[in-house]
Length: 111
Image (cartoon, rainbow, N blue to C red; front, side, top):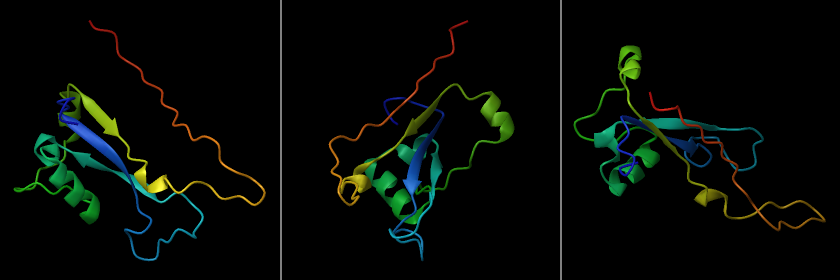
């Protein structure tokens, strides 16, 4: 996030094991994003604290961009962390050979 110098950054967070009653055994997609401003992603420690608390951790707390603030926003960054999914997929009679993350990047042409 710091390398991008984004006005706003977002990180997808899996809620399983972080929110009460959301266990690994439940079916469904229990995730959302934490939105960050530059002070929120100033250090790895702030990111770790934010994932534990499921909210931005900088002090003083930052305000989210307003809709008008989004209009003036020059850049966004989106990151994910797949480390919690390193245990593989278990399906009877099958084995996992490969896991790939698919990403589509698009750029707006420079004016």
